[in-house]
Image (cartoon, rainbow, N blue to C red; front, top):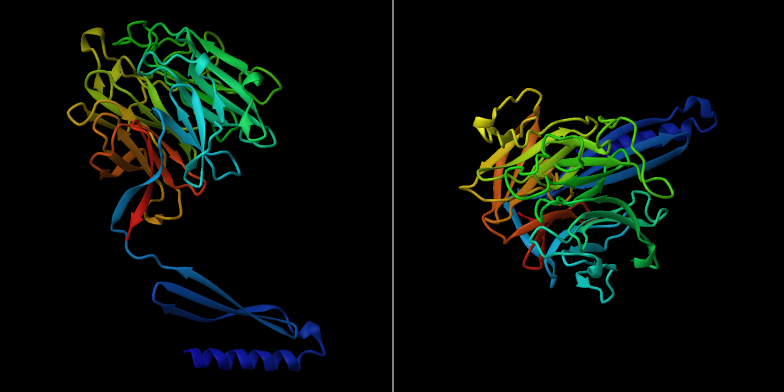
Length: 412
């Protein structure tokens, strides 16, 4: 087969030379001549003849060995109560959020001496769910050198603030408080901040804490609690309400509501995935179109796929039910994650990963036609998983309370 390919190539060269006196008689054309398989590499050779010039182009693609499973290798360690990890646009450094009020930089697996931000004096972490909880870089970073954080202040109230980055670190004196929300209890503070595909900042807030929606916020759109908010921070100061937010009165920042404690949410290919912590019996993952605001995820009418308190009534009309739930016989508190889009494990492209904080297992599913499919458990226990993250290559990171961050890698 390779011998025949050479003959075709020689013939093309002769024809090109014969026509070299009249370029109009030699149109550009492409002829595929050979495809050879060698071990785990596929080599494709294409011959292109244009006028009197013959160019041979070769492209090689690698066929990976079969996937046997995954393992979780240590990416960095030595943190104090880490609760989140992310990257800055255009950087391979990891930025690790410590609950006590510090953000540290990891470069080439090593923690830098100088923190990215230290606001421990502004933060209370007296309760297990309080502290510095979220971090997001402006999508136009570093042209717009701002970062946004979510923390509970010394009064226990949620604060969302922006800082300007100067010489690679956030300037503590540049703080601009964008949002301040009174918290009636110390738990259910949410804390995730992330920019959506529309360029707006999304903020997760729990129902105000205690238990059983004690303060009646779950179905109340007059309060920003128990909701995911959407605001426009593109202006020079403060924020505005983006067009399309569903509630013009009450709390116009609300995008979606009916959430008990959205502990980590993420966007992927036009969808929003939310891990919502349950009450006594069920944990859930909610999935919705990213561009569809006003959805009600049911709390406290529902917990998971079930009526929370049937004696209170259980009209589920208009409620967006979760795509997956698990009971407290399997765990106690969900940690939402990300859809995998990395290059190291193409077999898992489109797979959403999540974990349970108490049991420490890591599971996944595919979301197809409105339903969870291909459910898998990848790790029986890795520790108390506080969050997930993605590195600069889109590979999945796992954050554990014990101070170690792991990277998921293939076993082949």
